[in-house]
Length: 436
Image: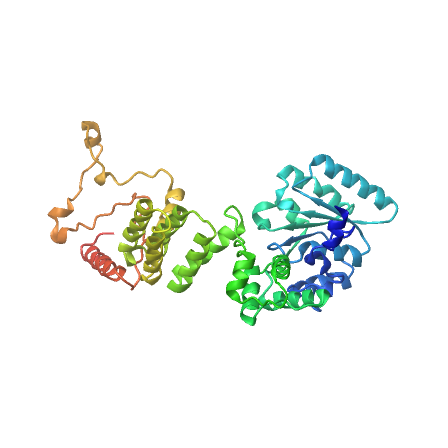
């Protein structure tokens, strides 16, 4: 068996993954994060000023968070201690804190790197506060989730959040060049396939290097892959998207804003990405229905009908046929006239209703089913609009203590232009008839 391993070139030492072999040895070697580690970067300035404090490193996978934490410990001469919130509990934290205190007595500080720090519950997060405050540890936490939602306010107030960006195409290309240099061989890819591999990485440096390793393993002597060959070899990496994490919220936000911005092409792109990643089509249908009310409203009342029809069509057809109905609805929403007048009006009405509390409606619009209520003036003075000129009485329907309010202001777009004409007409009649 040993002979077989030797023949395969494995030897006694298991080969290290390419991403590990390319791990930077200095902050200046970290790619794609110049805003942090470049000559004028935030971390560069902190180190020069000898003022490194506790940090939260927030960014997508494969952008260098763990590497930067290790390098920070090196340049600040702190002992590097790493734990993962996935595998650690309260007992582990206590042990790490005790060791850090003992180390501090000897004059050695500790940089405690906590991977996936958002996985700790609130009580576990609170346990960091005393050791951060007294300087026992310099905490560096890494998270792929929005710290504002996942971390305690008390913890965030004691740490600075640094945002790691997804690696752009230039940074990924630079990583591939370094991989070729360390392996002393070129990637067997055409120029188009190389560009496709960069796109497949989706801003993840570790993923790019893993894909490169797959290509090298698959290539026979003298073989060069085109785009189709590359897709076949790597079997196309699954999109980086977790329905319970930030990817979900980022893409649905992008879809909504593309619709609001009347860009049907961008809206279709984000819809396709989410469906491709396994997003629930019914979740998308619900969000499209929300767009119809929030961003279109009465500028095109048909938008809400289309949104509900798309949901019903998907229910009837299922995937993939029903996805076309969602695409049709998204294009309809993106190309419809836009108005948030309903959204603003309802928000204003809710605010005033909350402030007004339990004010009674004016008595003239209340029914009087009993003699006592009639004696108290209920329904007295009510004018039946259908019996009035223009079928409009213009009476006040707000509580008398509140007075008339104005929430809904139609825009000069789409069908709301017609609604505005009607409301202006009624306002003129109200003024002519002396109604408040």
